[in-house]
Image (cartoon, rainbow, N blue to C red; front, side, top):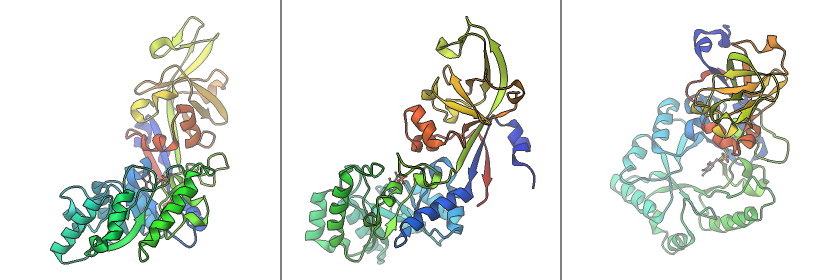
Length: 373
Ligand SMILES: Cc1ncc(COP(=O)(O)O)c(C=O)c1O
């Protein structure tokens, strides 16, 4: 097999983004093993958290996943086109005005977020003379999407609202599932358990990635892991049970030795302390290497830790490679910006954000290499 890092595309690219589809599948299986009585779905919205919805969903589908969740109708349409009619595809953001036909034409299942959406879906199903599937989202504390308590009360007083459709799942979303000791978790759980008694024939779905690790009470019938599939830690503060999926390697363009009076990068925010060797690497904030990593990011050349110095610019960053042997810092050398020693969550911490943002910001200029799948 040809070396994917030695192709013309890889040689031209400023950075290589490697996505390990076998690790993705193994993470999905870890989630499934953790919740053996539930159906394990996969959340593949936002280009499967930056990894590529098509490639990731196909790998998961081949591994046995048949329940996919995305945010927008267009994401659902695109996914249906590549997966065919086998799996179910559920659209979190609900039924937008006038979009009913998109759902039925592309065999997508809406997550209905209000009584108004339920009635619109009911009217559409009545018009077609066909009870199409749907889910409903109930708000147990996020105050974002889903039926609030007063609408749930109306629904229980008049279950007729649901009579022309086929209710598949009842969903709710945890506010702080990644904080295992947060009292909101048991509160939401109890609220959801009560709500589910109102829908005895529907499947319940509460757990996101972290929810799966809160224990069996949270699993219900279907789980919806997202970020854990892509390697982020669903159990912060404890060892990461997930395999790393993403590796980002930037290329050194140039190395210069600078003297004490000189500064590095825009705004002159880094002042060399004595003689320093600075490697300029071809990744910047336009690629999703966040500007908040200015003078706080850490990269690795093999086992050598090299700090980002100065501001992240649009297409470039500077690394202090003074302590790395010169033969390891030649132009063309690949530097781990996300890698075995600096996984997604650690990069996120240094950027003052969360792994979700690092993943979904992964840029379009990288040469992408997909392993396995
Ligand atoms: C409704 C819903 N369910 C599940 C998920 C997946 O969450 P996570 O990525 O934390 O596993 C999301 C992600 O935002 C979501 O909005």
